[in-house]
Every structure is written in structure tokens, then in C-alpha cells.
Image (cartoon, rainbow, N blue to C red; front, side, top):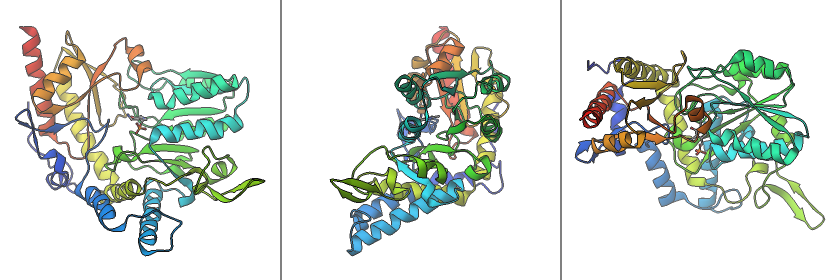
Length: 416
Ligand code: PMP
């Protein structure tokens, strides 16, 4: 069964979008590339590549401390990128946007700065079972340091968060709820606004991992009322090595800095140091200027296309993939939440995921195999690894057909 039409959404010109990503236009092992690994890292559109290139060719200098023209140009572009990111998640102020190296660093920043200042012996920290390791391990490290306890919010067989169990755990008055907005190994979209409301009623703050939501859907941190929200530039079609911690200004203001150095101070004497204002208090040292600029351009790019159109398009491609998976008795899909984004995680009976990944690569189809840095999810389903096809804005139904053609080849080989 192959559906040829890509006219899924009148506002969304998939052919033009595909043409904006030069890396897609290549052959791998003699086949035109089908890139189904955007969940790990997305490809980059020309506008992002050109913005980084233009910056290094023309504008590069250190920011914030120079009066010369290049330093001023770099500073203007760097600061403008923060305003783009503020718009991207609808933060109330650009002071609430802290640049980090990625989601991982953003979550560690919260655990180490807010956590060390606020968590004490005997406190509970709730962490969902479907988290990426980067939203588990920093809380375990904090708990070990403070003699606090990390408690698991369980999920069910479909990969849906168990809200009854969550409500029960809230009765223990935890201090933190660490939760992913979209689960990277399953695609589950968690009801974040409701989770935040329940957590706040119980007196907890919510630290959300937006690494897999920000590429796929419109995010409004004010509407969500979330306390902290972390995401990565490279997953929203921007550069690697740059990411964001959104935090409510009142919380960030009260937090101690976590790294000391240049740019995060107002004045330093041997009698003491006065820290800089937000967001710079949390950005010690020369920042990743070029990639911040590239990430701002990527955010503008997504906003220009429209996150609603992106979500509708990807949802349509995902539904098609799920309908094709449902035709296969040898295929088990992990993660069947009714609200699901961009991810098809699966097993094929009798075939190791790494063999699937290698054989698909030989047919030009890029997927990821492994535990996806979510080992508790693998433990829940009793598998060491899965094969994961993850969607980006440039994927279409033909890409899904190529994936299933590849799966046919894999099955032929293993059934011999
Ligand atoms: N959280 C989730 C849900 C992710 O998918 C990822 C990346 N796989 C991360 C956190 C970590 O992101 P990064 O490596 O960019 O810090």
C-alpha cells in the first residue's frame, strides 16, 4: 500500500522545504538518502548554514566587552537571537532565556543551582519512567548529595504516563517533578499543562525536557506555566553545541550561579563578587556566539513555517507510518499513546535492532538503534534496544514507503 500524495496540508509545501536542506540531497550506498533520525539530530536548512557561515566570514568577535564595530555587530546578532528564542517559546522576557550547550547542560544547571539551594534531606523528587537519562541522572546526583529520594512516576504498556500514580505520589509533597514533554524513545506527548497544575497544587516545581517537543509543536511556556523548560538547538534544525534553559524570572533571580568566570559578574574584588543580571549570571565565559545566532535563525525559520503546520504535517506522516506498521504481524511498536509525536520505535521479530539499522543504511535509510539514552524504557518493555525512525519537517510518505521497503528486505534476509 503506497500513498503518493504529499498534499497533506495546503499551507505546507513539503517539496520546497525538502529543497532547503542540502544534506538530504545525496546518495548513501547508491540510494537517495532517507533521513529518519531527526530525533537524534535534525538536518540544517540553508538559512541556518548561511547565517553561521556569514557570521564567521564577516562579523566574528567576542561579544559584550568590545566597542569596535565587529564586536558590536556580533553582540547585536547574539542578543537578537535570544529575542528569537524568547518568541519561539513565548517567554515573558529575554532575561528568562539562558544559553547552555544543550538540553543536558540546561537540566544539570537546574539540578545543581536550584536543586542545591532548595533540596534538603528527606525531600522527594519525582521523575517519570520515560525520561531521557539527562532528566534522570542529574536528579540522582542531587539526591545522593542531599540524601533526598528520586521516585519514579510509572507509565503503562502504551507508554502513557500513569496519572493516578502521579496524583498519589504528589500526596508525598515532592519538591520537584522532572518530566519530558515528548518522550524520545516512545513519542508520547505528556499533558504538561495538567501536570504543572497538579504539581503546583502540591507545592512542587516542574522541570520539563523540551528536547523532543520543540521541533514538532508550538510551545508556550507562559500558557504551560512551567517553571523550567530545556531544549537543544540541534534538534530544532539549528547548530550543535547550543541549547536553552527557560526559567521563570523569579526562580532564576533567586538561584545562585553555577559556574563562575567572565561575563557572569558585575564586579570582582578579593573581598567579593557582585553577580551580573539575568541571563548573564548563568553564562560564564565566552559564549557559543555563532551557534546561538544559528539557533535563533532556526527558531525564526520554524516560526515562519508555523509550528501548527509542522505538527499537522508530521502527524499525518506518522499516522501513515503507524498504519503501515499495523499491517505487519512481525513488527511490535513501542509507544502507542493516543497523543504521540514524530517517533516510530519498533522491534522486528527475530532480528536484532543493530542488524536492522545496518541493513536499512545499506538501502540509504537512516534510523537509530539502541537504548536511545532511555534505559528505564527499555527495561519496562524488556528489550535491550529498539529501532527508532524519527520524523522531521522534511519527511514525507515516500520516506515511509522506503522504510517499509527496507524492512521487507530485512525480513527476506532473516527468513531465508
Ligand atoms: N532529552 C531528550 C528527550 C532527548 O531526546 C535528548 C537528545 N536525545 C536529550 C534530552 C539530550 O539532548 P542533548 O544531547 O542535546 O543535550
